[in-house]
Image (cartoon, rainbow over all chains, first blue to last red; front, top):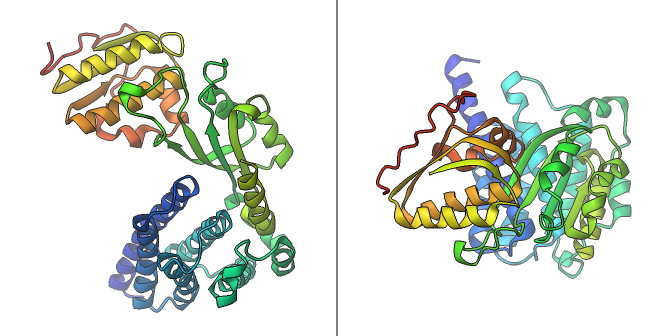
Length: 270
Length: 107
């Protein structure tokens, strides 16, 4: 590889990282905001740009995978597919997967076998939505279908645990602070069980200054959490705030079937 | 403007009034946070509000010398990027040096 090509690939890597960050950010916003055309277009552009740049470098694996993601986003853009929490959950996993396709470019490694198996599962789920008859079945592939398609967990896959994070969504109710609880203390407690790999504080619910109740809580959080703890242990962190907070805890992506099933359950429960 | 002591649910109503009044009066507002001993989510929300209102009103906001208590909260909430250039993250000395906050453009 010549120096110039190497430098260009590094640029592609940096650009893709930024685009994937944007994609994730938009998806997280779509989780709690109504879908407007600008957000969907922004989402489409991120994937479209990655696919285009990957094509220039002949990175066929990335082109192939992002093509399916782009097709689904195109249908969302044209309102041919209705956006559901399941689709957003699936796209979040696709975003993570694209990241794992892009990252090895920096180190020259090839795609891990377990990731190839995951890709097959994701492509199957994406194509489910791309079929015309999928419109009448918004719930997406059922948990059974996803479980069947899921690769058997092997030793190789276990090695991915380090990048295999929980996803925790929190929307605190306005009375939390007045009830003597502080979201900060729950986050501090959470850090005793693992590492907060990424956290986004959602401030959009904060009203205008004139109508803001200073003692009310308006914040929400999207957290990527690295931990070996089980779901019950993580759930227990939020036990005292359960009535005052919308909580959704999604397992690491190695459990895609659970991920999709739980997001559906939490949504219907909220 | 200088915040001292608690910026918590117990003091937040007063803090809210102060911040709203200061933002309305100034073209540039410096909030010195060196003496903030305790900050909770209610306090953080006022800073978020100050940031958002300053952008809306075109006021230049400087949050200077965040105390250890405040840094801790900003770190946990990953809010450093949100405040961006408004947050002037200079070192804080225990003696509270720098407490002479400048009120540029503000009486």
